[in-house]
Image 1 (cartoon, helix red, strand yellow):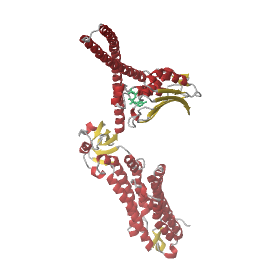
Image 2 (cartoon, rainbow, N blue to C red):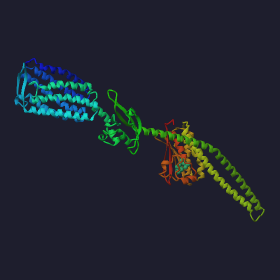
Image 3 (cartoon, helix red, strand yellow):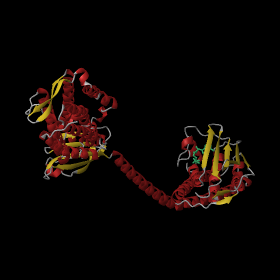
Image 4 (tube, protein in one colour):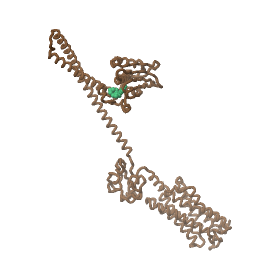
Length: 619
Ligand code: ADP
């Protein structure tokens, strides 16, 4: 290899320094695909500039050819340009391994032809080293493959530029400046290459392309360092905005929409292009009741909760308008972000409704409690009075009977009319008194039941201690034997002697069991049977009360534990239940962490089972 001093090489080596800095800047942001591709591009430019510089320092054709061959290797860098443009403008999805490999097919063939040119002359038909002044320069005539290569390079350049220009036209001004400087930087090598192939060079045989590349460092540096090419990668920003669930609308100073995301399009029911250029006021007015103050100063930092009427159900949004300022601090636009808060609003509303409902229930309970207390005294006065009246009636009836017997013995043929009328009046009165007693007793029972339910719900007082469930149930059955006999019913108890003691509140559980036995007797016609038994199942003690009574309709079954629910209103009215017995029993069993199960067939009877967990010690 022979060398020569050549002043034309100096600008190239100087130009290499800024290119190194730019490549370094891109490498530092290599986590970003656009920056990586830009790094490949600048590295190739650097390689090209340096190899051409070395070619210029070569004194004979063979040495020149060595560097030339390497130079073509760096031509590959042009492929990075359209790829960079794609990544930079947010079309990363286009960059697939297959496409990239396809783009490298032509450069690979060209490189192979460069290295084997002597055999075919498809790149250079003739090559020579010619003296221009005191320096030897490479002289050549081009072969057909070189023109193909130039066409390919120009296409790649053009595609890259078109992508960037399109992107610049659709995006913010800050980004546009980056693109303009970038485009300028790439225009210079394009001009240089055109000069080379057309032969319109200022110094004969000196290739202007590497010089134009070195020169392009300056606009490149402006784009990279002044406009932070990779710190503000617009594609990334757009992707972030696009992927946001919040509707984003960017407006200029005149409140015209310049950018939106798909959430905004969805909310407004328009396409992005249908929104762009529109004034934001009517767009917002269409979907909400929000009135935007058209004066920009007033809209700065606006925050409001707005309701969208676009859908059938109202949707709630938190609207924020934040000003966009330029470097001088002047407001140049607004970003409107509408965040949907319907779910939050719904939860808040539900919490409010629940609190109101609780308050209503509390007031109602207080009212029922007070009213029930107030009812107790008059009811007991009525019952006492009715009792006394009945006694008076009984006495009057006895006196009338005695008087009638006397008159009968006095051999009076005609019975005393007055005596008969008095006897009838007393009988009627006693009938009415009995009706009063029945109703007042029912009322008393209702009041007591209501107070019981309230007490169980508001201040449940349970004391759990291990107890023998069998003897507890036996007591209950015993207490109802007389009633069973009165109603001509069989009441039997079959205890499971192996049942272990259970942790129960004996007083409360007794009430629950009695309630179920009471119902069974109540709803079983004379001649029927009520069977009570206990047994252990898995981890529970079970108390079963079955009857051969009227049964419960399937439609009523899910409701019988509700307060005041009575399966057959007409019949229940006659039999006088308040519809609270099962609710109370259920409350008690639930407090034992147990449950009541019911099986029933209309006309055949019912089976109620109380399941009491054996290991539950606390309510
Ligand atoms: P009530 O005071 O009306 O008996 P309950 O809460 O004890 O109220 O019972 C609710 C309803 O369930 C009753 O009205 C009745 O229709 C039905 N019911 C409860 N136990 C039985 C049973 N053993 N057989 C048939 N129906 C029953």
